[in-house]
Image (cartoon, rainbow, N blue to C red):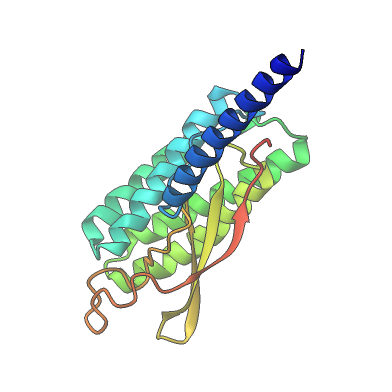
Length: 205
């Protein structure tokens, strides 16, 4: 009986050591920001897929602004408009008041995206992007977006080096679309300037 208990004890120590060793290895790699996989949602695919398509278009727009590429920014904003128009808001699992509020924010997102398309300068496109991002953030909170954690980032000197600007990101890494990687004065020096101010996290625990 004592031998049996001793064997169980030794086995437990070995198993515990194994998990401690390998768990530590995972922690060492966790410094690299990763986009989280999509989580189980309370909404169905009919709603989630076009909503995620719209978000992906937004991230393409953000990346285009990082690259100072007005052509790609216009194309991404045009795509965002198309994706937003395809979201079946009546599929949203919420009461009618929330659905109507969400529809209003979708309309504002589309309006700002259209305004961005109409602008020719990168500076004016970024102004439209700021307002678009604010409306999209409110939309995400209204629908309680639960597919992944999103971050609301802030640049305190986005415009004229004195006015703030916000944007959404799907990683914790700061990649600033207001200064980008080709700034005439700072080059890439302000690319990582900014901070996470808030988040959208309705992912089921």
